[in-house]
Amino acid sequence: MRASSSVLFIGSAALIYIVAYMHGRSAGPPTGAAHCSCSEQSRTLILRQSVDSHALAECVLHHRPTRGVMHGRLSRCLGRSSWQPPGRPSGTSSSGSSWEGSATAQPVDEDEFEESETTDEEASALAKSSLDNAVSEGEEAAVVSGIRSATMSADERAAKMLAAIQEHIEEEEEEAVEANHDVRALATAATAESGGPRRRYRWLSVDYHIATAQDVGHTLTELGQTFVEKSLSGACGRRQTCAQARELAPLTKDSAFTLCPQPHALRRAAFEALRGSEMMLSTDSVVCSHPAALCEVWLPFNKSILLIVTANLELARENPTRWREWLQTIVAMSKAPRAVLAANNRYDQAYVEHFTGVRPLYLPTLANYITARYRPVPGQPVLVARSHHELGRKLLRDLRKAAKGHPGLYVSSIEEAYPGNAAGGGYEYTQLASHPAVIVVPYTKSTMTFFELYRMGIPIFVPSLALLVRWEQQSHIMSERIYWKRTPSPLLKPSTPDPNSLQDRAALEHWLRLSDYYVYPHVQYFESADDLAAKLASADFAAIAAKMRRHSAEMAPIMRAKWRTVMRKLFHKLPSGSWPTPSSGGFDSAIKQRFGLDVSVEEPDCARLSAPELGQWN
Image (cartoon, rainbow, N blue to C red):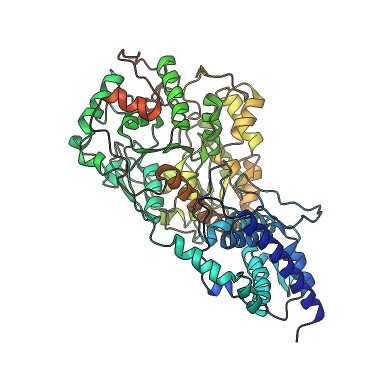
């Protein structure tokens, strides 16, 4: 027999449920609302009698992340409502990285994207991550039935809360049925309405970077999509994704990067040559990334466009005329239907906004194509990643000297451990994962190598923000961060400091803190070679790796939800093949109709004031 306190608690929970339910029913589900897809078993959990009701109330009802999970689930099953239980004053807070979302479970992107169709796991992930991050930082957690919150997620707590509600439903089932409030019948009907397989679309990538294309392709394939890669990268042979000359003609590996010497004429010629090709006829969406400006080629084809900025936006458009045209195109794309502008890192997200006033969706790389996991082998040295600056090589020399004071600490550069270059040699991911840690001296603000190391769960040590700012100001250690030193801002006067400044300390602090190394949690920081040696000698690598793995696991459902949101905006739930390339009319009418753009018949100046891919960093 239940204790009276448990009865009181369940009665209170039932009252809360009824209020939320009636509010949601009166408001009615909004158009396009996601429906409940949870299994029958997940809706009929039983609350153990041994659970202390007061502890449960403290750790569930008054715990915002858990409450958010519970409310998110209920609202999807019962017709979404804006109701939430009133907050309880609390002096505690969870600090963390830029990853953390709000303490609600609604799967809405932080960039105000409309809601996608998400699974229960995805909907709860944002709420769950804030709790787990708080636990990982060592904050005090309440106890439920003798189990510390470090071993109980917000999701599990929410299940207990839902179980208490479910018990009430079972006790009052007869009355609920008579009142047409049978939650199981309602949820089953909603599931049937939204059932059926997800639509499969065909995505085309024509890119100069194999790693970014590989990451996007892997993610889309996991989501049941078809990804076609026609790579123009010099390294495409590694993955056997090279485009054949006949497939893209008149575009070639040499011409597509800048489209010069006659970019407008080449764009028109490409449209006429490819509009009836099997490649374009079968394509639903084009993914553009590196360089982002290559997206200009695909604008008139009436395909959905996903632009993911992974490097400086001006790459391949480094003169005032072409830069202005490209910025105007970005703004036009942001206003057009079936086009999504994204960035895979916070720096480039803010960089695009700085020059255009348009804030892209943050769609970070998770490198899920990496299957290797951290498995340190005793005796393996700590690795120092390839450095592009003399300061990095000096750090390695100084670290080796400092390591002599710490028996058992061994250090090696990646070049020494795994000789190789783009033509061959080098390391396998499993080999990197056998080392205790990797030291990174950043040469730019975001790299695929960082995402790959993080995905494997290898502890990463980088200079503190203060140290990196000092090095950048004194020696420009991030030698590949600035692509065009005098990049103008022709469309607006930015409210943020100049991202390409080397002498303005405030500007450096503003921008460098947006680098991946300071956005992702559980990255380790050092102030000097001696400080680094001491931290390497004392670090609990296994604990650091576990936190990194947990963060990656937390982000997986969030990223799936984001990608489904992207697909909803790109395709509007219409079937594949719904957007054929115009069969009549020319380039100018097609691009005007799709994006409202006018492309001059006069050719712009193709002179480049900087050419980073050629080693010209001006």
